[in-house]
Amino acid sequence: MIAAATIRDPAPSIPEVKLTEGALLDTARTNTGLADFGDEADWREGFTRLVASLNEEARLNAVGRLIAFNEVLRHLENRLRVTDDLRRHPEILDVEIVKPLFMVGLPRTGSTIMHDLLAKDPSNRVPMTWECHLMSPPAEAATFETDPRIAICEAHFERTSRALIPEFQALHEMGARLAQECVMLNAFDFRSIIFANQFRIPGYERWVEEADQTSVYRTHKRQLQYMQWRNPRERWVLKSVGYHWGLDAICDVYPDARIVMTHRDPLKLIASHCSLVSMACTMGSDEVDRFEIGQIWGRSWEEAMRRCVAFRRSDRPQAKNAFDMHFSVMLQDQVGMAQRIYDHFGIPMSAETLQRMHTFIERNPRDRHGTHRYTLEQFGLDRSREHERYRFYQDFFKVAEE
View 1 (cartoon, rainbow, N blue to C red):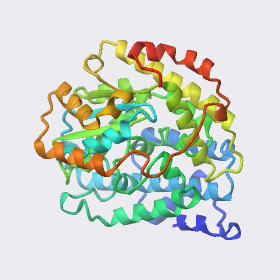
View 2: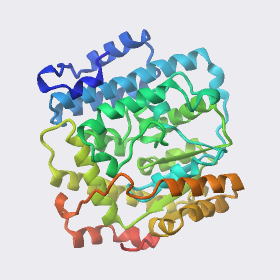
View 3: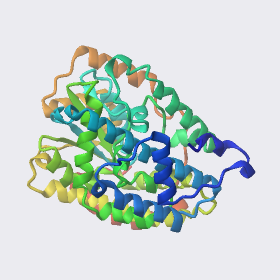
């Protein structure tokens, strides 16, 4: 297996990789000793489109090609191992997923801190970064805090994002023991916006946003069953910036889903997300166009907001019973907002959980990793035009300006 650690070496020692479908598939088979990637209808088109876009659009340098190769390879190896585990243990698919809570969050709207906060409830199960990073074997309750994959995943972050762009933590904290969002799980089918947050692949991203997401969330349910099999809790609490393009699919696959939507002044979240993407892209490309990033993601998040509004106007029961969390209100009392979410869905909150949440907030103040500054103008975005662009969203959800 090509070692990701080599990206820290001087440029002459960076190995040349063949970023092709054949090379990736062959390496995954060799590394795992397995050959069955599962139903091709679930993953093959996304994989083919992603590899093509990485080669044709991403403007990768040598480091970027190595990063991309290893990222795609990891997802392929996860597919091989999980597919094999499911073949050997078909009873996993009998696991029941009951009333999962989905946090549908635009970037920088408080969904991450609320996800981490709700994870403090011992009754809640969240996908942890380390178990999404290396999925097989299924995590076990007895070793959930000591699993050796935790250290492997933490080392991965040390030699990649933290080594190449240390300031990234101030914008988006990364760690093996943090709750992970479902864009990582959706990458299993190569139909996730996570890749466009790392690389310049607008053609692939547009396809992801327009594609039917039903098969993605059928896979997603199998993943939850897989992770819950040996480490069950009462309910799943999930979050993702990618749910906006799959709301109908989520409701079809999870008829008893509970929906929380997080909201913030769009002018704040757009600039912040563009800054995150441009920073991530610099890890693997010498040609990062900030104005282009502003155009691409401004369009994407406008579409996401329109889908939010359309969903809430629909007759789906999940839409009628959704809870709206406003960033400005949440900041005033994070634990109080968690209590409001529980009350809305009739979920009891124990005294132990309440204390755990208060302790978490005390130990994790905002900006503990520093402050990252950014402006709309850095990404070629005019404040007044952008304000008009998203007015429909602010009006519908009554989102205050900041």
